[in-house]
Image (cartoon, rainbow, N blue to C red; front, side):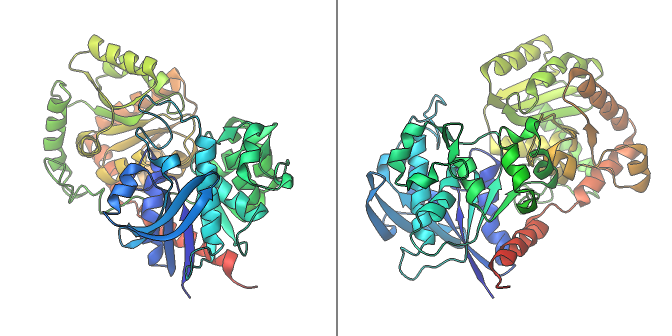
Length: 483
């Protein structure tokens, strides 16, 4: 039996991306196809998405007024899989990013924009498009949370089973109560078991309250969000629905992230030919203006934010250099952190190199040439960079939280003896704990046999979408099978 699933997401590769959500939403349709699931993805009609549909995309439905704006539903393809796009120029035909303008400031009407997106999703799930039916709705993060609220409180048709995936609990879509009259929901929706949150509205809370099941992108994060330090104010709701919450680790596209075939690298390699990585390291040193050397080259590919622990890494930068390490950093974010890393590079010319921004091809070159990738996050729902590091033999050095704890096996003595160690973990994101982890990493690096074994164990790990796709398919089937 084939299941038809509507995936509601605000971004998906290769059409639009700001973070890991896009990687997951873009990969799921292909990952699930092998398990009897046909997934249709619904995206907002940002300019880049509309352009990707071609000159004359097919309109399959129209709204004279979608929360006050005219809109069309366009049909296309996401790779080889069905795609629907909400073409609502009043909401999405604008420059900047998906959620904010060119300066990074959030659009003032994001509440209305993504409420309209949710309303459209609920209409599609309810059968407004002739001949298009679904068995289940899968919503991603706060931007899609209202889809499930509309299904619950103002359905356009039969209410379908639903799943909501939390990619990051820190982003919840909070808006004032003054938005409620514009949403077109009945009064009972503005209640503590509905969309209301501390006198206002939370789109994520709305989705969590309405969903049949709640997933996060790692089992450890699913446990962590029951606690105040990780639940971000919604831990009570999560504890109340504990039986409905589970974690499924993200996968990576091994066709794209594969050092044996990666055209971005100066030299391709496998776990059996790790010596070829040296050519990539020399090229990366040159690209970042770093001194050539045989000491460890640490890399960072990250948003420069408090969540990612970048403030603590900045504090530890002098120590990293002092113990013989070098650092190549690619990222952007907090202006003070950007300035701080530039200052660190000025203090240590040839030892620290910094690129502000994001460059996909450069990230591949960094993974292929770096010795260790630093991911010192205070919380990390899943994380993808450590998975890319494992695949490329770029040893992850990570804090023991969320998906980092689930995907990296610490190189303690027992794990090394058993041949399963894949990286370095540390507890608590502080200067001392990070410095200790850097010390351990340098010590391991100077034991070539041990270091190569850790690299090879990571490269042998299976973080493709095979297992994760099966887990999602099993979840869907458990919700749609008749008892």
